[in-house]
Length: 355
Image (cartoon, helix red, strand yellow):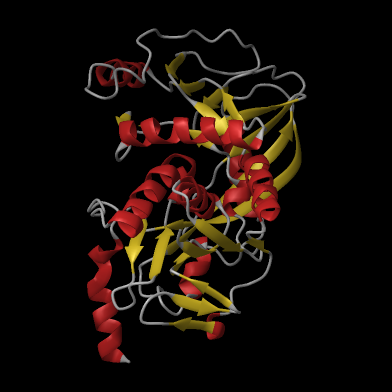
């Protein structure tokens, strides 16, 4: 049985920890709760890019991997966090209706896009051109899941609620030593914190700030997710999440007035009832310029690994990325080119020359 240290317990850290545990490995997870992206995520899983009506990267494979992963995790933890909920795409014109119907004939999309146009029957929503429905969708309640999983790790004696101190990491010929622990390797899943990682900061990780509003709308009475310019997610008790922003140019991780006003403007375009803002959330998504995850091994140290850069679809991507990384670590299975971080190894070589 191998032993792996995992730095970070967001969605990526959870996914690789659980995948390794299912493989009979031992893990020790470090987390100082500094990265909030997974905790504030809307948590929707949907393989369709609703702006352009096309399938996301590896959409079918991601769905086939993610749904059984979360189903098994619900049973293991004894908690319910996977809510099956329809996602409706509000049409802004007849042209969008036509594009939707064209997309329903495309391979891979037909099983996810309903061919029936839904008329709007909710007087609190302005949707004269109706909706298209995305099938087999849902929402992972990420905060609930992560809290339950951390308690599970705590029960195993596998959780260290502290920052990882890089100065204490000793890389041996085989494996690593850290704070009295001997392990086969370290897996870094720090989210946006990876930019401060001295071993993997050569990777092109960007921050994309996302903000959500919490609103109270007793007259809205909508039980489905509605995606227009922004989306609304019902959370119960006439309360909804509304979002999200995608801001590459930001000054800090705190919620902003500018994002609030942008989201309110988007909401007022299709919500025709009164509502009150009751809260606002913000987090920095770790994203990559080519919009693919960063998964793999360090160019120089064979016991250091990374799983990061899930972007706005972390719920969907993390189980697949974790499965690929576990196969690579434990059995030497090659990583798919689309997520192998070696595609950026030239950046490491360049930084070495500059050092």
